[in-house]
Image (tube, rainbow, N blue to C red; front, top):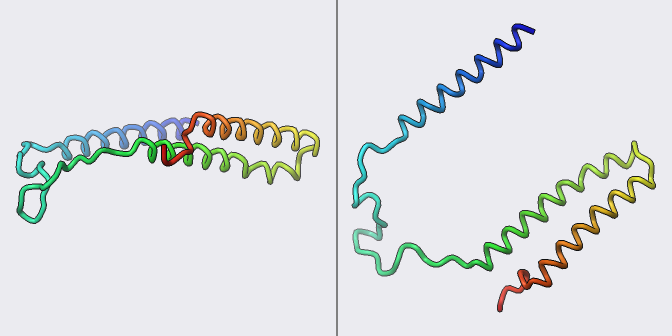
Length: 117
């Protein structure tokens, strides 16, 4: 037991020391205006380097990530099928799918899935 506590303590100390060292070494010592400005083959930029970002694209990406994680949560249900009772399996799976469908309906109703508005 003592060895496990000592190992955990050493791991925490070593990882903390590595994070502090990397934080200290990664700091820029000076900020140069030329280095932080955008570069276009030696010429001044023709337009703003910061283009406006489509909020609709961001919403679609977030919805994709949310449903992707939810599908990842559905995958273990297949392995649970072998060890659980079929009634409880279908009840839990149906409830989870119902929640997903309600979320999809809500996004559709709010107009988040409409690309052109």
